Length: 176
Image (cartoon, rainbow, N blue to C red; front, side, top):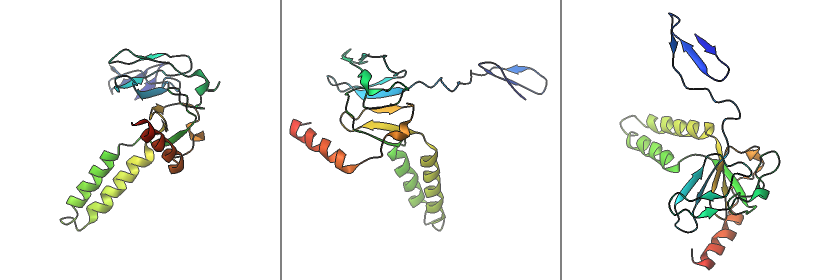
């Protein structure tokens, strides 16, 4: 039987003895997260509570401070631009590891002959189901930072190849 406390989930067994559990997260317990690459040492860093006014963020490797752009987050906590570099060019996608998807399909291909190709359909369905139910992530075209758990992320457009090409050309000119 499950008995809900104020901020914890208490589970009791049939005899009424309480089983220890972790607190259940409330709806506001998932603060925004930003993952970015340090401009000095290129180390990947992450900030778990990346709401407005939480910067500057320090690199875990070299200690370089990265200023947060406060104008990038609106009053309601939604993204208007990248909080790391300030670029307004953002896109959203599923937070899905492409290597995992390819690995699932490879397993299906390897098992295709012995299973009379049923494994291909099964692995494709598993791949689709995983992809379908994963949350979205917002990526900055300019600095490739990723933002998770912000309000109204569905306002950010999906990937646009024309915008991406603009940044690829800029990076080539800079020699990156």
